[in-house]
Image 1 (cartoon, rainbow, N blue to C red):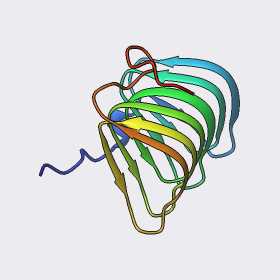
Image 2 (tube, rainbow, N blue to C red):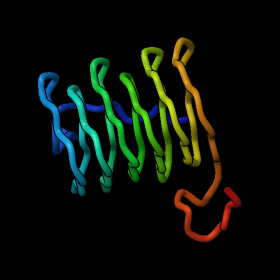
Image 3 (cartoon, rainbow, N blue to C red):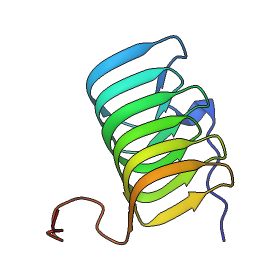
Image 4 (spheres, rainbow, N blue to C red):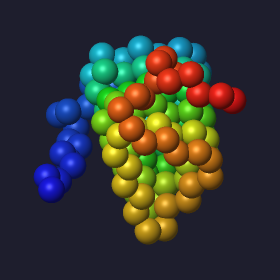
Length: 125
């Protein structure tokens, strides 16, 4: 199996620094790394990276995600979600591939499969 591509600063288009706090709706072209606090709605065409001290309270629609900090909300990832050992995730996650490292905390619902949005399946709630 191919290893998940490492994240380097050269592949990150947007960075929310550790002492930063942003609130709103975000539509990011490329990847975003959150070391600070982000609240709202987040859409990115590529990767969401939440660093060790990062906190994201959001409804997020991304290609893939690496979570090392805290995520609360709904996460739709087109291809993959990786929860590192320091991750704290609360909410719903929908993705094709999920990796949860030992020590990661998770509370919520997980859906796996081809559909990564609410369109098409008509899930009863």
